Amino acid sequence: MNQSAHPRPIRYGLIGSGYFGLALGRGFLRQPGARISRVYDPENAEIARRELGAVPTASIRELCESDDVDAVIVASPNWAHREAVVQAAEAGKPIFCEKPMALSYEDCSAMVDAAQRAGVLLMSGHVMNFMNGVRRVKRLIADGVLGDVLYCRAARNGWEEPQDTISWKKRRELSGGHLYHHIHELDVVQFIMGTPKTATMVGGNVAHQGEHFGDEDDLLLITLEFENGSFATLEYGSAFRWPEHYLLVQGTLGAAMIDMTDTGVTVRHSGTEERFLLHRNEEEDAQRTAIYASSSMDGGIMYGTPTTTPPLWLTGIVEQETEYFHGLLTGADPEPEFAALTDGSAARLSIATADALTRSLAEDRKVRVAEILEGAEVSA
Ligand SMILES: NC(=O)c1ccc[n+]([C@@H]2O[C@H](COP(=O)([O-])OP(=O)(O)OC[C@H]3O[C@@H](n4cnc5c(N)ncnc54)[C@H](O)[C@@H]3O)[C@@H](O)[C@H]2O)c1
Image (cartoon, rainbow, N blue to C red; front, side, top):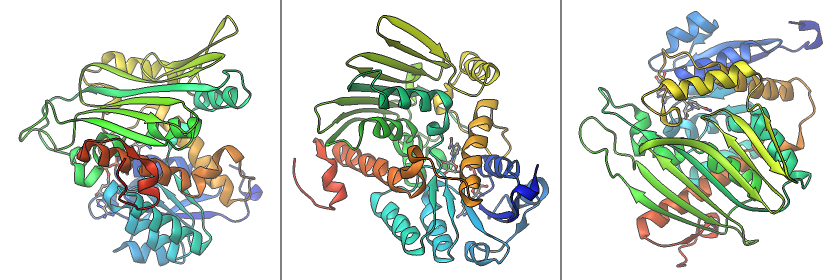
């Protein structure tokens, strides 16, 4: 670690030190000059004190206003992100906020506005964008190798067995359910194709009712239409006995399969087929494949707990995203590819589409995403 290259150490305050807050804390600690100086967590602050060396604080406000906090990491449950982000912005601190940014477009807007008013970064933990294979596919698309993108298809599904205790992640009001909690695929589709014109969702809770399950919908089928005549479909849920987890991009000149179960990326164009790694090395890809192959529950719907250690591949991309955010705070040049990821705008747009999809399901109709963006109650 070369401290002299980074004369100003960055002291992070961590809000929420469960499974992923600890993973992010470890990721940031690997960056030169980084410390986790403070933590706020109503239940698990002690683990962060022991493992990350962070001093527990009594409230979010106290953490955000602490003189020894230069930047704030928000990894609390999804429903709690808004308050933490707004308070951090009001304290003038740059923010790294886990996905989903919040559970409504309105909440996201309040967060983005607060960050803009304060002139601080608001980076979302849309970690898929940091997978090497995803970045390479985006470059191939930008270079025209796949031609015009006509269609994207994504699936993130598996089967959920009865649970002894019901995590907040399985409660619609707290996590947003599969669509919001696993916003990653929708976000990457939007990075590739832009904001959809219309959003349609059907589905419901078809096989997971009762005391051993949460109340989220377990089968969601999504269709998106784009202004330029292209389309996307996505499947999410825990009512799928045949698990799938992938993103397939179909262009006029070629296609790319980003496969998260048989982990790797395959690109076909001009009569050739090329396969490359999704993550940083063979070991990370192979471990991910092995996890999917060995698990009775699909990895696409598996959930960590404060005592779970993340897999290698996830540790790897957390290292990549924390390195990027820390780099921005210590003077590195921003990369255009990630601009919409560091001002909250991409995360807010994916929630706009998720809100349109939620309205589509509730009202049994195709919804224009503009209805959400403009806050208008317009019928399709
Ligand atoms: N990017 C990814 O791939 C990824 C993976 C896992 C989780 N996440 C996100 O990270 C966030 C945390 O998830 P997790 O898996 O660590 O959950 P978790 O349940 O393991 O941890 C949540 C922690 O937040 C604490 N908490 C509860 N209420 C709080 C509040 N009001 N303020 C601060 N802390 C509070 C809990 O005590 C707990 O320690 C979620 O937003 C989740 O979506 C992202």
